[in-house]
Amino acid sequence: MARVLLHYGYMLGAASQAVLFVVIYFSVADWNEVFRLAARFSGRFSLTLYLLSFYFFATEFKRNSNYPITKKLMGVFAVVHIIHFIFLATSIYLNAIPIVFTRLAGGILAYLMIVIYPFYIDKIQHHWVSLIYFYYVGFVMIMTYISRVQGAFVGAAPEAFHFVALALLLLCLLVFGLKLRNKR
Image 1 (cartoon, rainbow, N blue to C red):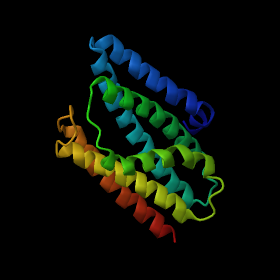
Image 2: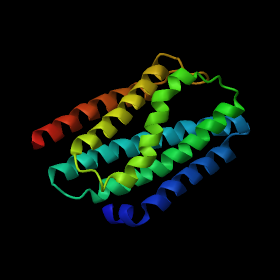
Image 3: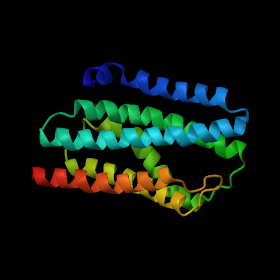
C-alpha cells in the first residue's frame, strides 16, 4: 500500500476526484447539484486524507523517520483539496450562495497552508511548525463541521456524517497529540 501511494499517489488522488465527478454527473440531472455534491464528497475525501496524513506524521515522528509517507499524503491532500476548492467555488457561484468574507479568513489561511506545506516539509527544522499546521487545519475543519451541525450552511442541512466527522476530528486530534507527546 505504501509503495503504491509513494509511486502513484498524485495520480490516484486526481483520478479519484475525476471518477467522483463523472459518477455524480451521470447520476444527477441538475448541473448546480452536480457541483454541490462533488464539493461535498470531495471534502469528505479530503478529511480522510488529512486524518491519514496526521496519523502517519505521528507514527513517523515516533520512528524518527524522514516522513516519506506523510510527505506524499500531504501532497495528495493538497491536490485533492485544490480540486475540492474548484468544486466548492463553482457550487457557490452556480447556486448563488451568499459569501460572508469575515468568516472566510481562517479558511483561506488553511487552504494556503494546505497547498504550501508539502513543499516545505523537508525544510522544517522544528516539529512544532508541523504541529501548528496539523492543529490549525484540524481546527478549521472542526469549525466547518460545527457550522454544519448548527445548520449555518446554506443548502446543507445537518446530517449524521457531520456529527461523526466532528467527533472523529476531535478524537484524532487528541489521540495523535497524546501519541506525539508520549514520544518525548
